[in-house]
Image 1 (spheres, rainbow, N blue to C red):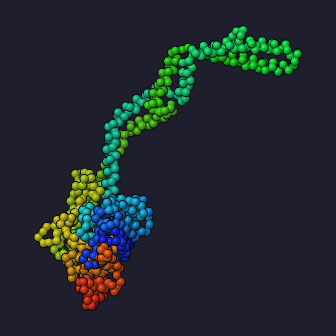
Image 2 (image 1 turned 90 degrees about the vertical axis):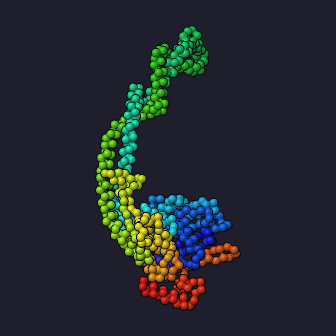
Length: 567
């Protein structure tokens, strides 16, 4: 239910908040008072195209805001809110601003959103019926949904939609797998080459560090031999070596200990030095014995390091990285080997889903064709009660030619099945029905939707219905009939009706008057919820014109009393 609508700096509306109530809400006012602009504001709130001309002169931007009450039994609406990440609450707040440069901003429950999302959301909130683009009857895609709702075929339609979606996913997967298989041979050859290259290297963890050390020694063997020999000779090679000189020092100190026993401490220290020197000399000699001048081994080591470096550049920064790549490649090779098997599985699944979809779609089509004639007759009969005595409403079902259709057994089908449903309409005798979207006028469109909604009163999920121009070209008993039918419809929907006729306005549960006034050279609009006395005056104005007489008031009171008794 629409609880309130605010129009700020929107056309001639300076800043008006309009409260609404449940059941049948009537909006009336003199011609040019701003009722049509109010409808334009509703359309803007619902995502319709608007430009900068809606911004009130001298204002930086126009703002439209609406607050909707969300019923718990609104699964489609609640799912939409949840799927798009908007805050869930008993109320839904929608706000749209239009700048003087024509740029729009949208907010849903306080969160920034887009016009496309708002347009999708609005289809679940409000249906406006009149000479407007935002009219669901002008969207042929709604015709099939209305027929399904009337015939109670929503479950079967959902079943077809699910089968079609599942089949499309399988077809997409099948085509991708076919493309993958086409390139799999080259991919498999490359992987086998890579594995052969890695396996031939016979890698060992940590091998690269060991090789680097070995290469460093082999490449400097000449220098190591030469300089370590010098070091060894300096320690123990000749009469001037360090070890011989320490021996001499010890011998000298031993002869001085008798003179001063304190010299013994130096002897002990030199004894320790001598042991270290001999150990060092023995270790150096042992290292010298292991040094190889082996050009072949050096070349082999260098080649091995180069091989590892090449593999690292191609497959991983470390030997462990290369080995992990090999494990992954082996797994990938096995997956490639199972592609044909996977393709066979998809072919089988495709055949099963085609059979399922075809069966469901054919049964759904039979049910639609059975229901279409009855729905067309019921809507035609409703139209006759709305002063459209010669109207013919026809529902035609043809094979779909949708772009997203797939072919099964020479039948095209999409998410709606094998059918394309179009409403045909003729208002005048001697003229064959034509597609509703091509020939219907605003007033006819509103009354046609009223007839449809009357027939489908419990099937429509949209909670708010707005009727504009529904009184075009009618009066007297027909207008009263329209009022009664709007009132009956308001037991299942919130109905908002803009009207000039007292016969319709009198059936309202809630009456809003729109008036225009000028102050300081600026035009503004006033909106007022009428009490009982004010409502009598407004009905009287609608009866008599600009000058309201006592006779008109009396007639208004009598007609309101008559309506209350016939409700």
